[in-house]
Length: 410
Ligand SMILES: *Cc1c(COP(=O)(O)O)cnc(C)c1O
Image (cartoon, rainbow, N blue to C red; front, side, top):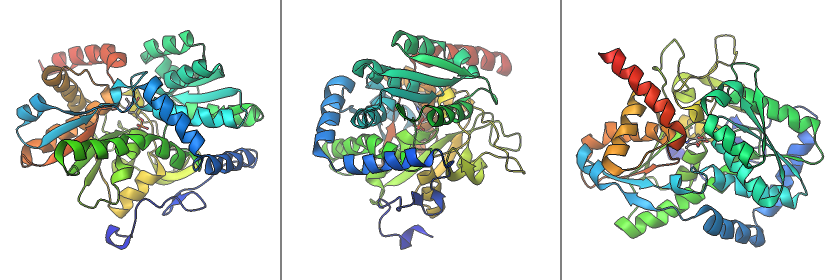
């Protein structure tokens, strides 16, 4: 369906959890009652003012919201075109947007009487956010993390342990996020009674994609208000990096029905989006299939086997993408592009040099696309990019990659 024929992009998902043909609830019979239970509780909760009062209080006093909307003046000058704003979600407690969503799910878990929280994590940011909020509420926390990611994200593993979480290294597959999510789903079925599965992105079976989006939408709601204050109008373009797609969905959703706002999602192009499949660009380089309980675009081979993604950024290393993005892609409401590791590394340095902001490698992908398009846009064109995480966790990866890049180009 083309986008002109759709009245509102904000009404999804339908009662079956579908965004167009995407999403849904592809789970085993043993998991189904848990999912239905969660859905019923979320439906009750999301219209309960007491729940949102608690969220707003913690967002303000624990997370540090609202995050600033920052005009990146030197970056704008350097690129010589569009006016660039950064939504500073890297300033949140724990250093990324993940905690916006974790707070929502854990308050929900407490309302459901659950005492044991499980989570999957890739870069470790969602694991750290979950361990943090569990510590705050005195809940048991178990985090599944691919063994490969445990190796390359050591500081976050240590953080989770300090916060009292148990980190379980997952060795199946290539030991990355996809495999960690499979093991977390298995755990959930095994320890049904007291366990709540806190998913870190807009993926998984319904109601997770909608629920995580609703919690992350605080990013876009704030950005909308702040942009009206700063510029007296809406931005012309909003841009965010995409792993599973939660920070992007959070920024995009409040703008979906503002047709003047161009929406761009940036996937991880790894070493380049081509037949070697050394990338994580599910929309630009994959096709529809079913993974982790929902139908969406996936990286897969000719037989439908899921391929392992590749990216310098562990947080973008997921072979799928939230189903709502697949739908926004097919309707044309949002546009999806990819940038390579090398381009993201250049943008990482650009942000450090011009703005004194060390970004995570994930938003460096969004910034790389900003750097591509801004010079060709008029000076009154306003871009809002989501600076969804800080780069402390990535400095060793970057140091190693820069050496490698310099030797390569010598
Ligand atoms: C986890 C993470 C991502 C990827 O997850 P999304 O669900 O796509 O937002 C991106 N950036 C940062 C900083 C992260 O921690």
